[in-house]
Length: 369
Image (cartoon, rainbow, N blue to C red; front, side, top):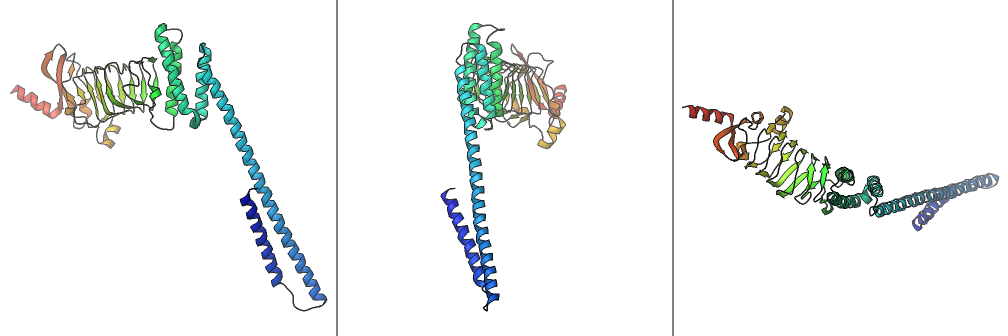
């Protein structure tokens, strides 16, 4: 029992005794003789019962408090022992990362992943840093060995899966750690979630059919900063972003927000935009190759948001290599749009313009006259 509990116990005892004394004084009988003696005996007995009850109450309360404190102390000691045990496991796993044997490295990464998921407040950030660092090491070794079937190609993909799962589960929201920069790596079908992607994140890396979910793209991406052929972007944000001379062929964008973003001199062939909201009036696509690009908007998306706001001003000097493969789906926007060949053709392909359907009809009538 601490000092505060002792003081409270004394206060309760004194209070109960005072109450008993007041009851005794106010109960003094009048008269004398045998009758008065009997009444005094009853008062003394009642007083004794009150005092005994008060003392018993104080001792019972004190034992209850003591038991509660002992229970809390035992739980605290048990939790500390558990944390010490987990810390020892984490240290052993970190030591195994430096092993020359693949099986020990795999065991170490899976152990770090399990510990971080069980105790995210203590180990999530450290796990992301450690797994990202190990991924850079084994990816570099994979390039040197040039062994597409053996070590460590499969290990690279497995480690990348652990890393991006940790990032996705992190309760800090969208995060960016310098340690997550994965330069010069080759990843097959990585699932990348909840990450802020900058030009340094995957610089020089090859992401084969990557799946980006809930990611944000920021910065100016140049050729070599980002290879994403066949990638899928779902619920991603593109804000204050530019892509220059990057191959986006056969990629898809679902439920994305394009804010201050621009694609310049990019290969956009066979790209699908599904329910993408464009929030920029200036050119979004500048000198891009856009054969078979499909802009599609569902009715459920178009109505509540008032349309994705794609306009003719979002296209400038764009072209197609085959004049029969102009972008489609523009007529689903409000107001409806259409891609029209301008008649200008050079070694880079056929240029086209995007305009309103009514404007295009007037242009056709004017040319006929």
